[in-house]
Length: 246
Image 1 (cartoon, rainbow, N blue to C red):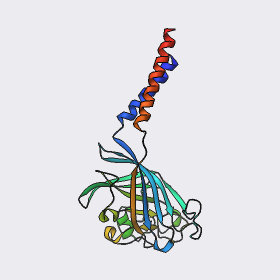
Image 2 (cartoon, helix red, strand yellow; image 1 turned 135 degrees about the vertical axis):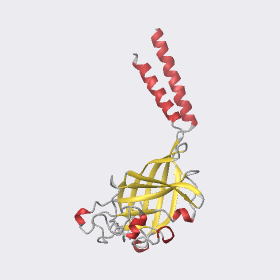
Image 3 (tube, rainbow, N blue to C red; image 1 turned 45 degrees about the vertical axis):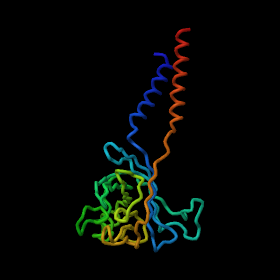
Image 4 (cartoon, one colour; image 1 turned 30 degrees about the vertical axis):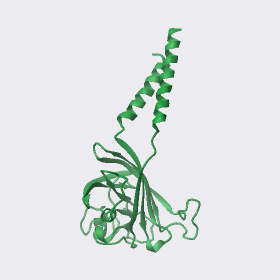
């Protein structure tokens, strides 16, 4: 097969695949938890996810979570994050359908580890959810042996399945949460967490709680871009036909 024809066919298939997947949109998210004890440093989750508006599902939630107990509060640094350490959360392991304030959505959680093991379950619970963390005092999974602590961390977001970019109501904001049980922290057996009294019966382990979540659609190719691609494919096809005719 002529290599040019193969190249054109490949580009056409790529363009077709992009159009076929138009129901899936990529979004950016920034979630902020106020940390009264580590000001001006807060816990921040910055990430991305894909949302399919046909199946109403979220996939590929991943991003990075700041550790507000790290860095230098006196030096903002070039990124204005005070030099905080950031954890990479890459495993979306939970997506729970909920109705909050009459709005259907999903509570989606991405983890540092490939397992949900986060908190001890000595007082009951599933070992990772915000409520389990509150009920167990935020103590790490594997307690009382530090060597058994897997050092997990997670961030939980809320996605409105009617419009992911819609601003959150207070009842939705109250259900956001994070946990950081990374070994070597300054709180001994207690993980750093962010929760609300309204959502889970307690503030986070250092009185931290969610104050905002902003979701925006990631940039996509403009219609002119697709037009230029198709025009380019046409020119390539024309050149191929002329070469074959010669």
